[in-house]
Amino acid sequence: MGKTFFICLLLSCAFVIRGQEPSPSSSAVQADTSEIPKDYELGDESVSPDGRFALLYPVQDAHTRVVAGVPNALVRLKPYAVLKEIGEDDVPRGRRGEPRAQWANNSVVAIWIAAKWGSSDLWIYEIENDQVKRVHPVFKEARKYFDRDFKQRFLKKYPKESGSFTFVSDGNEQSGVREIEFKGRKLLLNLFADNKPNLAGGPHWTAELHAVWNLDTAKFDKVDFKPGEISDRPWLDN
Image (cartoon, rainbow, N blue to C red; front, side, top):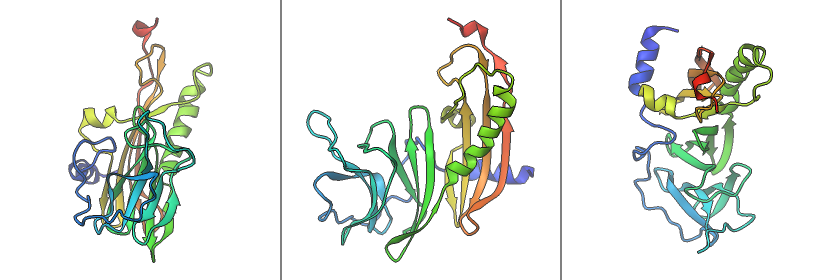
């Protein structure tokens, strides 16, 4: 990949998946929540800029129990309509595994799952005529690069090791690279993975990916996958 491309990628990224900064796409219009079912509430920064669409979360009672059977959902607020149920679990705001959203504009939104260490899934939803016109499985496609490297380069050498790894946000924070940002009809993506983010001892694998997803072609325009060095951490063994 060209050096210019990745310098631009580093300089332009302006949003971290587990970020603490307000989203620049937060709704500037007061959202009408009058028709939201009583078992739902709005998520932080989940409303589209025009206030028409939002990501909803099941409410919790005083004992922090979640109303069963109330899935997270991408909805039209008024007149109320569910456009797409998100994820497989019913996760309230602030809980591990909650979906989060960043709007590119009034009809394009990135939604991901916030896991313990980082993201565990990511989709882009395009809305047209108050319906989801297209879903881009960005995370699924990006993960293929990590899976291939992990199996071929790590598990073949250490077949007794766990067959799973974790996507982490620490790699982004340490390098100063943010994870996602929309640039017109493209999404800039930076992912980091680690087989032992808890600093456990033994064989250690990492990898990172920097890519650009094209919403018009529904695939990556550019991908730079960087396998990390496989090392051993015997000093951390119990």
